[in-house]
Length: 390
View 1 (spheres, rainbow, N blue to C red):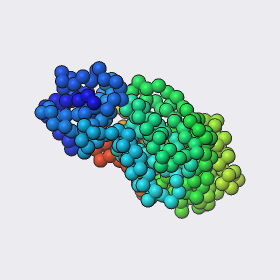
View 2: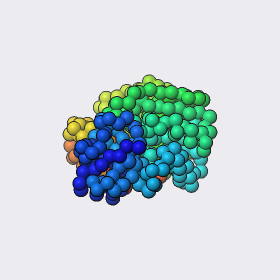
View 3: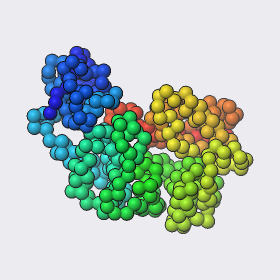
View 4: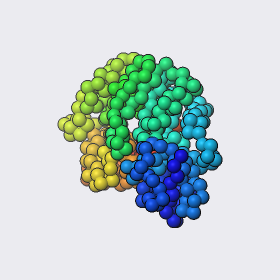
């Protein structure tokens, strides 16, 4: 195992528990980082040569090392043991919290496994790696999943855009089993495409938010924008909504909405519409008791923050115009570059422009299966605002 050394006084943040080491914090004269294989396991020491821990190295990335462990004897560290131990710990945590095996099983640094996401769908698992370290450890990850779960379906879905920054190739591999599954959530059953759908096929992060307003759906007219396969819309219809219009730009998503509406016995109250959300909002005048705005990430890089915030303001302004007086706007953002206060500021600005009075009646976030590393606030990417509109 090669050893990397930090510059003098650059060890404080890492010793306090931060899991990332940036390239400009390394003493390059003593650290052979450019000669190392991407994803190799390295020992990290402070400027005095005192061991700090071990991690995965990424020579070409701004984040040069992602820490894995600070406790073990670095001379005897076994990466396979670390991965197996962390997966078993993550599984035990979820099984204590969820009565059914449908959840995010591993969430990166929150579970001590940087660069790894695993979503569980009953007897199916979808694995995503976003760093060279986890890419090189993929066989160990799959072996431990087989050991603790033996899933009938196992898919490696590495087509996310975030892999580009690491220089990782893109691809999807169905190792075994079917490419689709049924998700049980909030009393509903949802057919999802694990191999071809968005992300891992389903968005567990909105689990709690979808049901938070459940009593308010009764008798309501609901507009669900960026609906994907109908998670919000089906829950609303099951809770007694009179009419739900689900809007998504993807033909496959619209088809899935219709399938899930029929499967859950609410097809008579759900209409699936293919279209751009802004175009749909601006082309009609009908108002709804509840409007759900759950767009994809509109800000993916800090340099896009100004333009992205403009998009959020425009989208929220158009949505506010379609909320009936006394109704509710549910506005979400999954852009990690935008925090909850910034989102609320942009919604307030949209309300002023639209001449609508709003009141914040609740905030939503991420569920228990998305643990946040305390020194990585950007992991808490999802914000959800519940707003009464007058």
